[in-house]
Figure 1: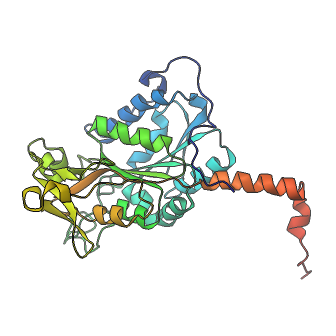
Figure 2: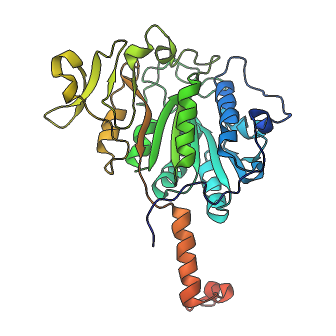
Figure 3: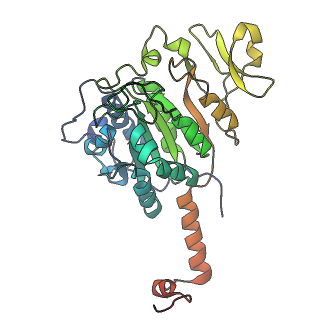
Length: 350
């Protein structure tokens, strides 16, 4: 079977004529709280999709349960508001049966990483041709402010009045641990960066996970403020660019280097020399360095938080391998008898 990467959208029909963001807006009232970060993500997606040139009837958005999961109602494409945590499973079935569709999953940190944790990691390891946008606001917003799987230790919420005792998931680390072939992180308020990441995810064959830091201004306002505040964001944010030295800070005074013990750490460029900085390789087959980068950020202060594409490697998608296997079976064995298969040879009467 072929394992070479092919363009993810090569089987999806193109549209005739030019599209705009308006073509992807529905007549439904957008019902998120005023100021919610979901508005920015919705606008970015609606503004980005015309670039793909795909027929709207061949684009599908599938969501689970949560504030973010209202997303399909506001997209003038096909869509499904599915059940809690199961959006990756529903999307996987659709992507495998309909290669002519561009399938997107909209989920949140609670939906994806709590009840949906198993569905998420198995979709990632299988490399089904779906794009998962994980809105992470570190809180349960729809149910009015309980702590979530990504809430920091000590988080005081309605369900943890004395502070959460749970150690949080790092969604990027989870995805890399599952050996996802495309893993990225971006921020809801950075339209340019968000669009660049979405574009790369769309072009990737297989599962792409994009964690989007998203603000819930009602129940967890300012969760990502250091990454948004123009006065400090350059000092705390590490912007990953493939093939470039990992360097950041208001004046580029900080960077990331590999230590003698094999770990990667934030260093002062003046002390170690620019020539010793780590060159980011998003296409490295081994996810070890990408995983190490995902562990740099402090979960409370958000100091040294990497954003960008951590991993983007070619691997044949599960659905393509499945189609090739079915074609091989038809060629070598002919059309099967489903009834005979179900009855089989190992049956008995009770």
